[in-house]
Length: 218
Length: 218
DNA sequence: CCAAAAGTGTTCGAGTTACACCCATGG
DNA sequence: CCATGGGTGTAACTCGAACACTTTTGG
Image (cartoon, rainbow over all chains, first blue to last red; front, side, top):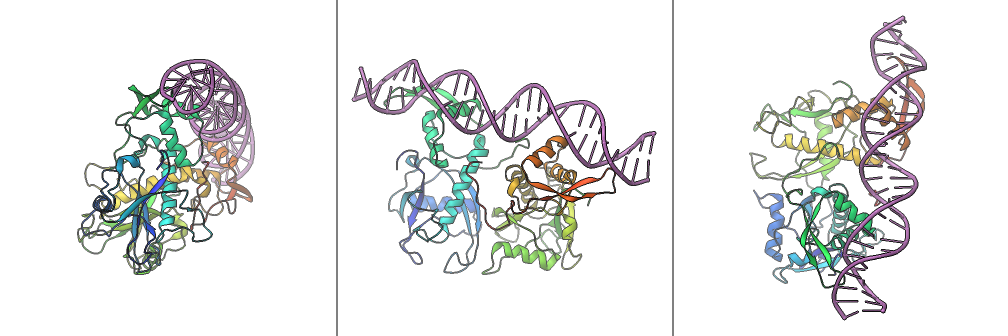
């Protein structure tokens, strides 16, 4: 996957229904298992991925979304640097990153998308929620947008991928810097052309994925 | 309930656990029943309330939130003009409006709140979500904030109740009016002192409670 | 030396905030 | 006539958007 690309981690279904189609990873919730933990277990056990923050997207419970019978799913979403969460190939299921562009989620006309169940819909909603988070709660997103140390251009590429448009370099940099979200580290990224300043998130300004408390005054 | 007050519709539990404590209305989801419909059925059957828009708050599935065993609840919230959704007293359960101030939800220290299960937490989150909605999606809230025809002061009182602070009259009015959300009707509210202009929401600017489509450019 | 990415300021419009006085009406 | 709520404008500030050139480096 090219850096900054917007992609979704999907698995190929091995069983009916929707055999051979792509689906979001998931698993039935076990008794006395927190919802989030269910997903972490599934990601760990069947793809070897662990340690990301999760945000709840919502519950999906329309009858008919699962042909086998009425099922309610609780969906979570996150954003990670793919290179830092490489899945273990073929451990249990066939996982892969799928570019959101090629999934053609917005073909609301035909069912052109190769996605099982209502997962195309869930991905669309997650994309919205992600943008919403970044637009309104940048200062407390738990998402792993970039590696620990990053250049501002790298961060900008991520924004451009998520919002699916180019953003102005000067505006972006001044916005990020004046908000005091990042701080420069004593190192530069060399190798491309002119060396670029590396930054890191200012510590503890960002929430860890447990509780939140919205500030009343915007 | 006094106009503009922020209150929650609660029922007194008749059974253990939490017998005698207050709880949010709810009911188990039936097979092949959409989640929203479950709640509408419950509100209709046990309180005689119907016809409000619902927004999903999220799923709550921590083990231990129900002492009887692991249970996952999907919570919804809305905002209505209480006078227009009078519940039928004593039909099945003992319902009542409870001022959010007297519920003491923010006593995060002791468990002073008389609420069953994790419902105090759910109400707190719903309050946040409500504010968030009004702050960011005023032009498309499906909520019934005020009766069909209202004065700007009445609308302002609702905002003040929800945000729990006073707002400036001139700023509020110009904001509402310049956004073109409301239009004056050919009538005034008389009786208090100087007669007040009545307004109504501009038709079809506001979504009905089915689908949404967030505008990308804020 | 040149291609490519890094880095840097200013101006404009829109929206939000703070703030004070006159008007109409009912009692 | 007076108490009460209805109604109005302006100035300062903040934030986001548009926009172009110089600097550094590797090849």
